[in-house]
Length: 115
Image: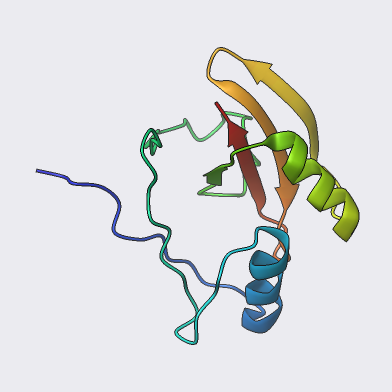
């Protein structure tokens, strides 16, 4: 019955700074309605996964973590370095792909993934 995710919504303490950060750092085209539509490309997948309350994969005080699939982590890391955005954790590679993490203006961990 589920076709896919219809959206991800959350509150922020500083709307303008958050929109500017996601627009500049992740190159999302944030519209006047304070959001964007990301159209899936062939071969993309969306994971929907649960974690226990004490799982340390992302900060315990953070209820949700965004994960964005990217074409090239090397290219993304070059872009982040150019902007002066530090990695929040070291790059990791495992059976599901390669991951890096950065923090948004509200301090939320954001995961970037290349499969």
